[in-house]
Image (cartoon, rainbow, N blue to C red; front, side):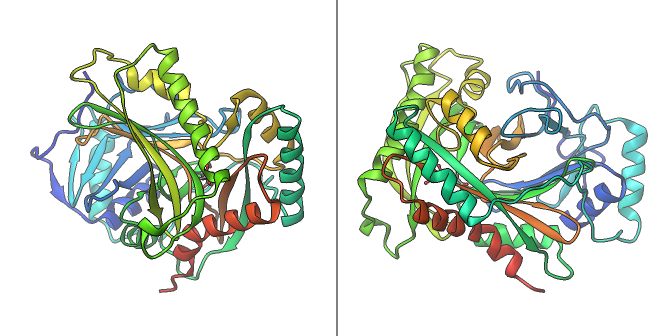
Length: 397
Ligand SMILES: C=C(O[C@H]1C=CC=C(C(=O)O)[C@@H]1O)C(=O)O
């Protein structure tokens, strides 16, 4: 049985998110903060021990906590699990039943102390960041279009990063609160792990979710244009329609591999994500009706990386990305989210995100390339996607 946090137990106490985050940073602890779409409840958890890396996530047997997984597992980037030893639900802080007692007491003591410095964990990886130039990205897109025309693949998602200055006095918790207010429909997150670093984002894309009613949910999200006032007026070009249909086909092939036929499929429909619109098809399975206890874990293993972040077929698209993208995606286009929380397990694709360094932030964005791609437009699309985090950095307090 998954260990859920002791809810309103003896030690449940009222603290602010800022207090909890600062105590975690000061105590060298891993912390995750999130807000689910269309919810006003901020949740957070802190792990008191130091072992964060984990193997392939097992959703059904995992204790309560938060997964943070890269695009590709490597020596540098591994799957991280932040076990929820302490859980903040709204403003109530409660320990898990199996939290290590001594570290718990130390954490509570540090919460009583005056707030520590306004900081965050940074990566201890060697500073080998490379940044893709506009010309470099455009050349990669041109090569991708050629490879698609030569039938080496149907679609590939090419991405890039960009370095931006952090405004003076930047506070991750205040920025999280800004994101939560600005992007009510997104999964909003702030994750900070010693040695690994700090990431923030407002993702529009569920990878795998299983809610309290035991409903499994995944989605095909692709196709991008700038948002219009009235969503009903949105007109989609054939290029975007096909690009999104490829993601649908990929999800259906995963269900087929598991021989699962009892799913519902709704869409594609137009959805708004920040300043952009996408096409989305929702796939759901009611696990109360369908006996498939490991569906979450099995689909997670098959889906990631989906053709919304990698391409179709997966293998040649991945090989193309590794050969031509020209930088390390790290945790961008990986996935993250709570598992076995009081509201279920909700893993999102790590999109519209940034990584915090000491004085700067690295922003990430990609675009789906098909035979009909115009390289300059794909570059602009990545600019628009970076605006989601760019707006958070523009806020000067
Ligand atoms: C790869 C990203 O978005 C994906 C999700 C929605 C639309 C996409 C597109 O139109 O290319 C991408 O597949 C990103 O935001 O970096």
